[in-house]
Image (cartoon, rainbow, N blue to C red; front, side):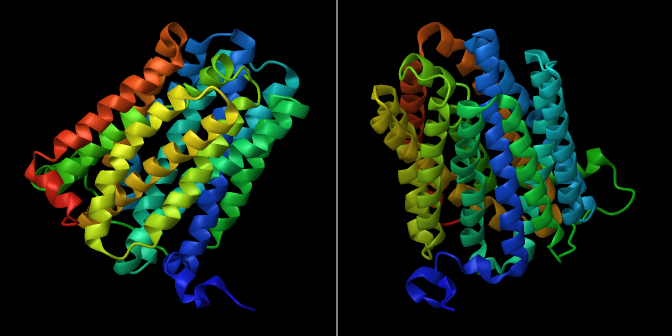
Length: 414
């Protein structure tokens, strides 16, 4: 049988898949991430239906992301102290139990909005352990020269799952009820668990028994502070995630106010994000030139901001889905390159903790802006919010050219 890895023109996009452990890690991540994005959609739609409050949608999305202000350092500590595969397995089991509880409460008719918010906090806390352990494990299962390829392919499972998860949620939301969406998410987490169980690698970081949590975090923080490249990457990632990627609470409002489809519209928009994520991540996965990676970090950063303008100007599904595809693709491409640079610079003995701290950049800032965006979009409309943040980040990217360290990164030097 002909395999894609035997075709030279195609194989460069899938080099990391030569590793069996990475293949299973990718499959496990696809199941877990699809479930998470499915929950984002079904929770947002259900809360909007029950409360008719855009602010409540923002609070619910914030609840799922807020733990990433607190839990990533702990997740990084566990990923460097214990076997990273074990951390992942524990997380997937917890998510399965969480989905079963949501389904049961829905069937019993006692699933109120504040219960959804409380369980969203749990879902987000466990997800931070999953993401930190996954990103820490990737460099252990692929050669260093395939790291960008592996990170990009992981981005496909992370953000391309916005196509699968929300797409599956459209079925129960249209034909049944949100409760069965929670059940489908539980099945997706089970599929992810099977993938993680098949991983053979048993790796950990450099935390010795008896080392305190505080001392371990101090070591990682000092390393980040002393590296100009890491400091700059952390800042760029924080600004990128907060200004361009905190859209989950805006899309349900945009679908209702602009597109007049509050039920299935958000699923279609998220599927657009997922489609663009897959295509752009594949393009980045095939990059072999460090200079090209650096220049694309600059280009995709600027495009991340500009794509929000396109979505803001859209007044029909065709243009809106096209713009969400560009938006999702440019964001994922930027994050794949930036995260691969972080993983390249971080030593293995500190990788879990550095990844955990970076997760605060990614998830913590997105949590705050999702809360703010959900509230303010209900007051001034989603269009103005999208235009404001898009313009601001594009201006920041252009202004960063005035500083030597960003210029060095854009030239492909870490």
